[in-house]
Length: 334
Ligand SMILES: [Mn+2]
Image (tube, rainbow, N blue to C red; front, side, top):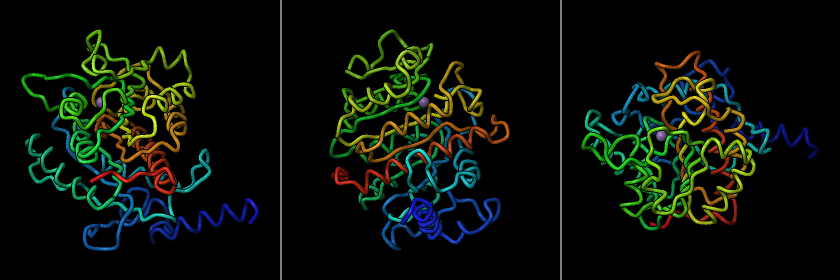
């Protein structure tokens, strides 16, 4: 096949994923990237990768609204077409990928219960060998996802965010959108020496965070600018190595010019192109799960934050697909 034939072959293969792919992007019901909706993921055909929402924002410390994130990211994801020009691939066609809906969290008004119910949900997913790619919700939703994935072997973590999210306790609660990585280290499902924070500009952090004392690395915004995006990605690769690694992307890593719709915006962040390029620099790592959190549609303008979130979720999906198709892929040990 020549290049044009190969391209059209990839597009055709992608469109086989669901009938919605053939429809106009503005029509039909919204699923992530117009993939099939598979609420039968436990009883139906086997699935490799699940796109899933966790519409909870009880962990927020400031502006609210991230509970509306999954629905709006689904909506904007119809603008993200199925070919990744930088990675020269489509995530669709080779693996079973579907939108399985939102995590089952009936205790929606009690954060401890939300975390417990989410953990049970994601544990069932992980036990089936399904890789989750998650849309939040506030950042506290990351806690049960990582805990399910890191049950037998601690995870490395590439954390892209304007804040460290390494607060031990706030107002007497150790569960909120800035505590999950402390919890992860304390409970043993995160390996602190394989944690890297990227794009940090958090003015409320102590001089040395709980994570840094335990061995985590920080590439703050000043360092990001000094190094440049490709060197930042290379440093992240070096830190997490070949072991199972989780990527947690807080949309507030982006400058508010690119992502105004978020709960705790911080000026002086990365651009949406730098965010994409950073993720492209993380290819062929052993990514066992990922999330995109903190999109708050009530504070958004023209859907640009949800669109950025959808695009970054697509890049994460491409990374996970590439890893699952590679020899280096190691299933999460159960
Ligand atoms: Mn965060």
